[in-house]
Length: 324
Image (cartoon, rainbow, N blue to C red; front, side, top):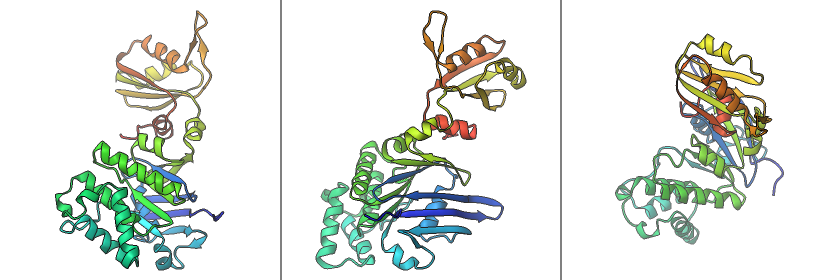
């Protein structure tokens, strides 16, 4: 197996007028790895994948596949890339088998090799019983599974998946995630975009957190959860004066206000160590902060304390939740 990363992105950038859709990001995906780009809608995930697939021309930076500059020979490199777009790229009036034979033929598969690939992919995504039915009769989850099969029909070295499980049923989602794991286990490099925290946490070997076109942090799940401190995130909703509540909690060490607007206050605890209560019981810094907030003269509707997590990290980096 090559020691070079299957994908290497160097200072990749794309602008639309005054909007920096992708702002000089760099990362790499290794062979056999599932690398997740996690971020909300509008973060730049689809724009990044579109440049990696050759659908958009970057305004800056480089894309390398196995050390080869994509711009130098895009046609040759594209032959080894599988793309699964967010919008299903299937022909509704054709059957699943006909779709697979058509796309497989575009990638140069013929004869027995094409037939074997179609049979294998139909079985892999669970569509064999409906292989000859028109795609327009399929459910949304079935179309998503076929969409995945089309991107894998030619056994690519690299697969680019853009939100492949959006809006589908749990069974179809599990099938897609199982196929992605199987593909990576065979040595394929997988770049997987999602805004689902649970998918990133359960699927990806490494994760890059993307927002407003910037790569804010990357690493394994364990590395990310400790990257900005192991403290908790406390969210308070109600009605209060921002300056008053900030002064009220200001006497606590290791506390950072992430966002405040008079109705919602988000605070990060930066100290990972637990504190001991009066009876010697270990208490979290978040609990101490909660007691301080509740002890003030504020109208509090709800308070939540979250342990270290990807959403907590996103809160600490941006001051808002991933789904805001």
